[in-house]
Every structure is written in C-alpha cells, then in structure tokens.
Amino acid sequence: MYPYRESTVSPTLLHWLGVHLPLLFLGLLESFLTWRRGEVTSWRHLWPLWNTIRWFLYGHVFNNLLKSIGKETIGRLRPHFFAVCQPQFPDGGNCSDEAHRGGLVYHEAYSCRPELSGATQEMLTSLHVSFPSGHSSMAFYGLVFLALHLRHRRWPLRGSLLGPVLQLGCLCVAWFVAISRVMDYKHHWSDVVAGSLLGAGTAFVVVQAARLEEGHRTTKAAAPTNANANANEKEKEKKKEGQAEADALAVGAVAGKGHQLAHDLCQVTCQGSN
Image (cartoon, rainbow, N blue to C red):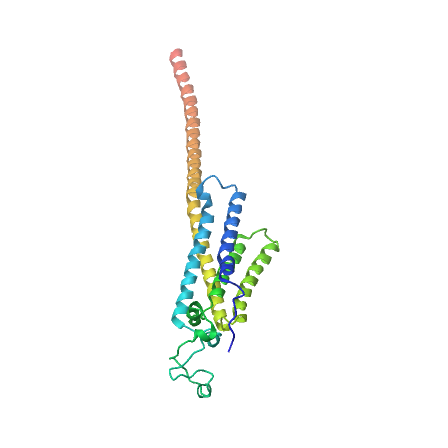
C-alpha cells in the first residue's frame, strides 16, 4: 500500500510549464522574427505569430480531450488508492482481514471511509483517473511543441549549440514532470508512459499541420508574384519581337525607296533625253 503524497509539481506550476511559458516564448520568438525581417508594416505580416498560437491552442484542447476520454473510460485506480479510500466491503470486512487478503478476488462493491484517512471529496473523486497521466500529457505536449518549433525556425542561429540545448532543456523538464508522478505515487509507470506518448504525439502532429498550412499560404502568396513576373517577361518579349519587326519593315522601306528613286531618275533622264 502506497502512502498519499502531495504533488511535487502542483497544478499551477504544471500549467505554467506546459501552457503559459511555451505560449509566451512562442509569441516572443515569432514577434522577434517578424521584426528582424522588417515586416511590421501591416497586420498580415503577423500571420505566422497568429498561426503558431492558434495551432498550439488547438492542440492543447485536443490533447486535453483525448486525456479526459482515457481517464473517464478506463477508470484505473491510483497507486495510493488503499491509503486514501480505506475500502470497506458489504460484509463489513476490509483489506486487513485475513479472509480478504488470502485470495486474489476483485471486489467491485465497496465504500470508502474518509473518516479514517482524512481524505477530501476531491481526493476521493480523483482515485479513478490514473490512466493516462494528465501531468505527463500536458507537460510533454507544451514543451515538445516548443522544441519542435525551435527546430523548425532554426533559432537562434544555424549551427549554434544554443538551439539544441534549449530543445534538450524542454525535454528534460517534461521528463522531470513525468517521473515526479511516479515518485509521488500518483500514477503507475505505464500511466506516465501513455501520457507522455500522448502529449508528444499530439505535439508532433499539430506542429506538422501548422507547417503545412504555413507552407500552403506561402506558396499561394508567391503565386501572383510569379505570375506577374512571367507576364512581364512575356510582355518584354513581345515588345522585343514587335521592335524587331518594325526595324525590319523600316529597313525594307528604306531599301525600297532607294531602288524606286534610281528607277525614277532613269525614267526622267530617258524622257529628258528624248
């Protein structure tokens, strides 16, 4: 029987590590990149910032939804279940009785005795939501998203070690949050593995979706420019062809006039001689 312990990573700290700090860093990074490119003349230049924040929030909601479905559907008991619940069976016995400790019998009918453990209603409610780990899922989603985005933007400098160090730091913080849940007897190790994979997988999918949309928008925005450039090239070629034709006609006209002039002089001379 595992004892009840307070969380090493509190819910407030978890939200800062998994949501608030990644959002703040993403906003500052995209704003800085936009400013460095000199594209601050209109709101459309801030579209990369909006796209990044939007997809991060989409993924956060989706990740939280999948986590909640798993918790409410499976209903796995936490490791500290016996210490908090102190279950009593319909016959008045409990897990300390020899009759119930001898055989491997799964009891579905029982009632908790919070007067013995001092458990609150919130503690009793959270006993059945061990799988998957919500702390691991949220931490890995936010910090893996940030690490992948840093890799995509190749910030701060290409070839610099600062980028990989920041990415490694994100993963280490997420890993610490995950293993703290096992140390605090809040989750089984398999709960933590499932939550970590859920958060990291969701982050990977969302980052790829954001990159695809950004690439599509960039291609679409560049299409009119390429079309205008091609049109200008064609117009220049037409002008060159027209100029060449005009020059050819002009040369032919001059040549024709010169020949006609000689013929007319010949006629005038002949008539004059007659």
